[in-house]
Length: 248
Image (cartoon, rainbow, N blue to C red):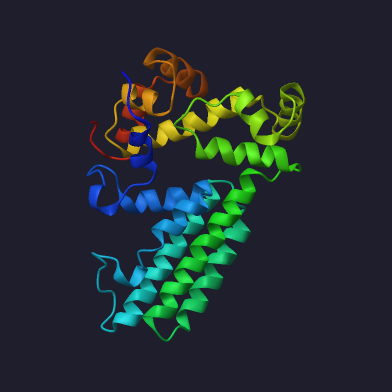
């Protein structure tokens, strides 16, 4: 099954008007920050928190109600980023700082601006975290390229051309700084994305295999099982049941 790369773009860069019904936009927001995707978070933050639809009234005063929602958002961000590897002390300290700052806000506009600042702060820290062991610019560029091109077949030759380095030298440098081969790093990153898609989108395993540029579904399942110990279907079933959500 061959599926256009546009489907991957639609999954990663969804427009609010075409959001898939089975994908929770709030979950997308938190997981995007957790992944360190600054470009996407900038895009998502164009929708101001003060204009967000469906927010419950937590206070008789609209500004105070928004402050409560802001605090909830910061608490969720702290937890998601801790799950993603940010140390507990830093994550909760950031959350406390932004909540206290929000408490002193005198307008919706101030809260909107603070919300964007806080989200980008967390996102930047998560992006840096994924490259914390990286000391060279070439490997850092490779990692950014991998995250931005998961919908394509990425090769060492691609990365060699990107960095201007000899393939053998880049391969050794990449392994030294990440502890993984280029191909293993690419596979691991794609499987992490596939796990998220299995749980939070309506794409089938076959579609995900094509979207993430695996040669076929069989190879995707083989790599997925090697990484997780489970087939894609079994992983989806176990995790959906654990969350109390119905199987699709």
